[in-house]
Image 1: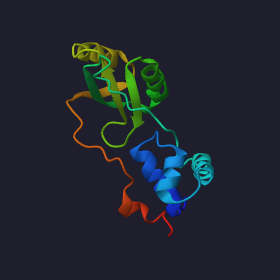
Image 2: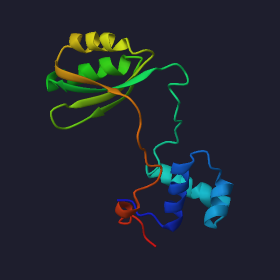
Image 3: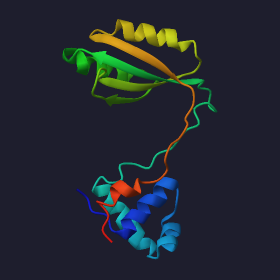
Length: 158
């Protein structure tokens, strides 16, 4: 388990809020040098505390009309083959291994809502798929842009 000091914690908080924040702006905000911020940032990456700084695309602005949440129940014997097929699909945004009634969950981008039939056909033809549900995401209600302070205090040392 990684232990975060006050500076690492603040660096993470600032980057979660704005992944484009400069080292010099972070340094000014938390009261250390930009060289120290850079070294800490590199250490956070090397320890895999920071996995990536990513871009959040406005998919609707670039022409995608919808996002489907797909729940798949698959036979474990076919799991790797199904995963390979899904990864090769152009419109699959992300795939998660899950527990419960459905062992794969994925997000599927669609250029228009008529794609639900094509997705249905794709999933029906995949060998080893036992059951699936396609849910249409109608909007994002909330996404936290900070670390969960109460639970991360365990990792944070003053």
